[in-house]
Length: 173
Image (cartoon, rainbow, N blue to C red; front, top):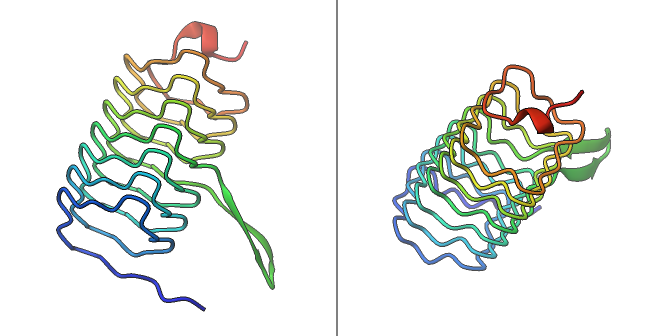
């Protein structure tokens, strides 16, 4: 059993954490303004209510991460792996989707990101770049996607009830 780094309530403004091993880290209420987390391993990390505007986590491992209630305005998640993480436990296989529920993602970039089954319910995704993103099976209920970029997006099986800003041509018939 490995140790979980506890960086809760730390100020990591402009920190250079490229390629860092932060899997399962506890980073609640952490300040990550303009931090670089490119290619970092944050799988299963808890970043609930973190404040990370303008941070960059390009090509990062974000499987099973929780960003619930975080501020990720203008954050960059291009090519990040936000797909669900499956963990084998004695009681069976457990599914951990990435969670961005109720998160401010206005202007964030998820270009070519894998967001299959991610929880984006109630998220603010205004002007977000979702080009070539895979949101198959994602929960977008109540999300605001006004003026988001949708080129070549996959929304197959996504839950869209109550969401706004999704062009009619992407809605199920």
